[in-house]
Image 1 (cartoon, rainbow, N blue to C red):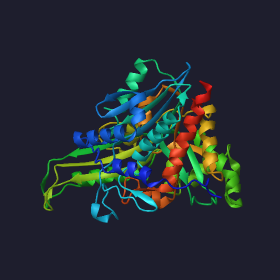
Image 2 (image 1 turned 60 degrees about the horizontal axis):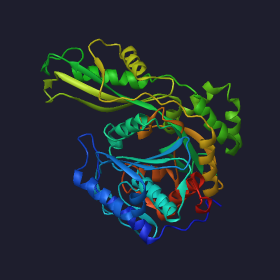
Image 3 (image 1 turned 90 degrees about the vertical axis):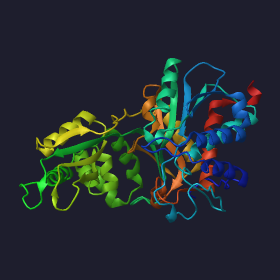
Image 4 (image 1 turned 180 degrees about the vertical axis):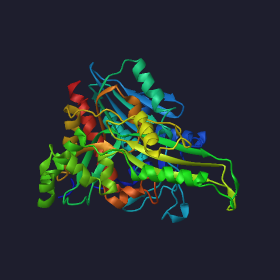
Length: 451
């Protein structure tokens, strides 16, 4: 059996999510979506979940929403994060259904945000609404924190919500956000793998820039501005940052090892003392190299205006996802050391973020793992680090334990739909997500008879 026998969500539940997907709450580096789209989504949430909006306190920070469900006892709270915004769509013509049509068929709910991250917003609200309808009350205060600009760094949403929680002296035992999922089809694994992430990598984009005198292309110098930039980029790709086996990746591999075929089990038998050798093996594939290295990804290069004109300016942008133990300043030092060219200016481009601390595997982590086993009994529970950035980083220090996880079962092609073409969520996955939040709240609340 690969999953608990949950039926798919019914039409009404699917339609509530689909209606949210029709709100074009796109965030891009050029700015947030029009206010009207967020207003439309807010009105939809308030209409769809009347008990939530009648009984929980709500404070808005721009279009971000912080709900407070006051507990009956003192003690550490729980913070459930999700975000309301989505990324832009590159090529609508490649989609099976228009990305903001919110199409529901017998198997899937289609649209931008179906996985990332409106399904989590709606699933949390579905579970809270049901708990209120059943007359349940939380023992500890529960916060629902829904940012509106996570896809553009969360500086106007999550940062303001987190600041308010700090002002109020909130301390949480658990902060739960997006990040890990249950993945099928992993190399060598017959069982699905549930990755409950305990932190995230940092990130920085480095700008390489060259200024030159220019001139006619018939009389070039030894290296043009474009050539100099190209050489700098090549050097960075050829000399990446060092490999390192971190404790959280060691924990991940240790959990996976018993489930692997014998050759792979033997290869991992050198852990923990042979971590360097295992790191070299992991570095052979891009999907696993990210586990053991600060990655280097040249993403933009430009310069020149005409084929017969020597360029006066050229630049490149190189994105780094920073492993625990490295730092933003260390990335800059690495770039200067590797490029070795005083004529290439090396600076940070835009915002950056240090890698997060790694959360411990205490009672809160165990609770998330136990709930996952209930829903997907044959899942292998492991841990890891989110390679991208989430709103969680803005809440650093507010919670004892941080978990980035949603119990949806995805394949590798499904992962490509996130931020890609044909994003969709199956009705069964959505049912599993709602039930997970329902069981989490059941653990946190007291039954009506107890009051």
